[in-house]
Image (cartoon, rainbow, N blue to C red; front, top):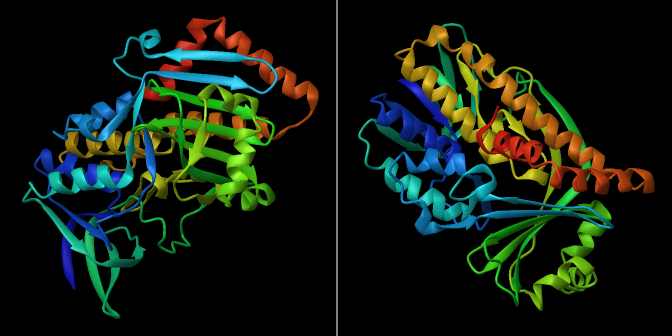
Length: 372
């Protein structure tokens, strides 16, 4: 049996940023992760607030990222809205970055801190208790027990934690994800398109676009074929603005589900990031919401001198922001499911109204960038 003070389970961006933030404040942490050397090809969308949070850790983020300066939102039929970085007085609206590149930079930074201990092992269970939390890990088929004052459960969502209760919803959709090479340059513009078949997001990254398209299961299975997906995209009038397009990358897919924890603090276990909530990708808010979890939790721990008795305050800190963003993305995704002509018309009218009311549009943009 080993004893640790603060343990972080999950070594993705949320877990690593938590560890570095606490270590920078002089707090010792132990991180458990099965594999910190990721070759994950996913591309992440980060708001400008998330960029600033990472930049404050001393990470040269811009050298691995692509800026987003404009978001173009449109609806099949009618309705267009544009959001520019200068509308909200920011240098950029956000960035895209390859998951593996961000992990590599964060891992490099974590190595600079002697008060971060990284244990490469598989966590199979976390057992909360009033006085301490037990972590059970497995090494070469041998189970070991570790006790800790506090466990921060980050992207350790693969752990079977039956005692954590979630509000869930299955959108019965599959997200198709791939990279598209286009004839015309992206000029740092991201697109959110409400197509007949489902919401489509195009994010600028390097010289290409990352496509995230939410489709029903039947169509998604067909779109896993490159030739079919390319023909499907070429048939859309919206795609003609990009000139000639081609697919030279793998096509990935994942099911779309809503999941929000009913409680974010379970005795001496705190849920952050994907362990706390998973939201629809329609507005690319998942990781940004998780990084605001990190910000609020770290501020609480640092300001209270790691007084574990104050940890219940984290629930109240995160309640409003999580409810707002999760409800916004969930209701928007549900609204987009409807194919009724009247509802589709209302969506278009709503976009036109939003584009003509910059004050409301800018307030909404700021709330999604900085939280509420």
